[in-house]
Image (tube, rainbow, N blue to C red; front, side, top):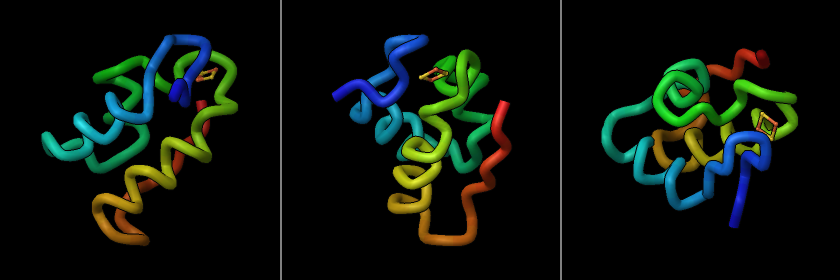
Length: 63
Ligand code: FES
């Protein structure tokens, strides 16, 4: 499933990036481009990061 339509980033890609050490939305944006466009995927992407790393750790910073 695509989370970020602007940059074609899938949920699977976000999970893989999170598992390889990505903990914040800004880092995810740098690594995948997710969130670099319209920003509507930021909320869902943050939820995925939080789900993997535990709540309160992932920092949302909308572009
Ligand atoms: S859907 Fe991700 S930046 Fe637009």
